[in-house]
Image 1 (cartoon, one colour):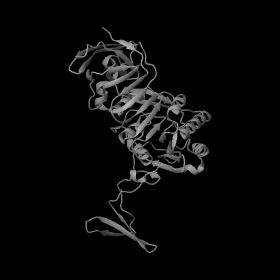
Image 2: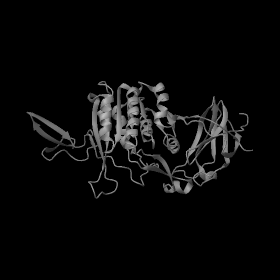
Image 3: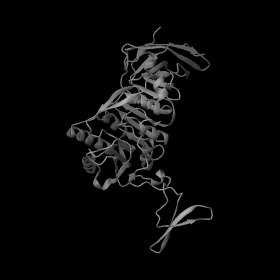
Length: 415
C-alpha cells in the first residue's frame, strides 16, 4: 500500500551543539518574522549578498551514485538571478542593513562581503546606518584563482566591511591567530634560546623587542593566506558563489564566543552555518533557493537544527516503505519512490538526495534518523533504524531539486 503524503512546514533534526535554525525564503520577506524573534540578540551577522553582476548563478547538482563517487555535478540548475537594477539593489540592501543594526546586540558586529561593484555605495550606506564612528575595518580578501584580464588589471580580491553596533563591541584577535608563514624581517638579529627556539630581536627607543619564529601572529586587514575554493576541493557543494570554511571561521571566531548567536541572511552554500555550529555557536540562516535545503541538511547533518521550509506538497510523489518493529526500534526500509513528474529528468531512487525517518508531533516532523548521499556513502541507504518515541511515525524524502515530501508510516505497535 502506498504511504499517505502529508503537508509539513517545520522539521527538526536531533543532534549535538547549541543548535540553530534555517529558513527557506527571501530575506526581505522573512525579516519581520526574524526580527520579532531575534531583535537585539545576535552577536555576529555575516552578509554575502549578490554582487550586482546581473548574472544568473547556478549549482552543479550531484545526482545518484556515480556523481557522488566522482564529486562532480552532472545537472546544472539556476540558483538565483543577480540584480541588474542598482536602485532596486541598494534599496534592498538598505532594508537589510537597517534590520541587521536592530538585530545585533550592543556587543555585536556586522560583516558585509562585497566586491568592487557595490563596495563604495554600500560603505556610504552602512556609515549612515551604523555611524561612521562604528566602522572598524575594510578587509581585503586576496586570492589567485580565476581568469585573466586584458583590458584591466585582473581583479583578484573581495572586500569585507566590518562594523560594530556600539563601542561595546566584543572582539578577540587572539581567537584567530595563525602560524607565521615567514620569519620577521631580515633587519632583526637572529638568535636561538636554550630550548632551541629561534627568535629575532631589534632595539628601538632604548628597548629590545623579541619575536619568536614559531609564535602565532594575528591577521592584518589583508587576508591573502586563505585560498579561493578550487573546482575539485573537497568542501565544494556545487553552489557557484561558495566561500571557504576557513574564511568564515576567522570571521565568526574573532567576534563571537561559545553559545553566541551568528546570523546569515544570504546563506547560500551554508558555510557560515557549518562554521558557527563547528565552533559551538548558535546560528540562524536564510536563503531563497530550495537547493540550499539539501546543502544545509548535509553540512548540518549531526547538528540540532530547526528547518522552516513552508508547506510541503501533499501530492506529486508515491512512496512505499516497510516497517518492522524491534526492541525499542523501528526498522524502516524504502521499497519505492516515484515522482509524478521527473525531477531534473530523474525519477525513482536516483531522484532521492536524502531521507529521514522520525515522528510527526503537533505538525512538526522530528527526524530521529537520517541519510544524505556523500562521497563516503554515495549509494542510497534504503534502511533506517528509528528509536520508539511519541508521535506519529513518518518519513521525509528530499529530492535532488530541494523539494521535501513527508509520508505517514503504518508502523506496528511498539513492543
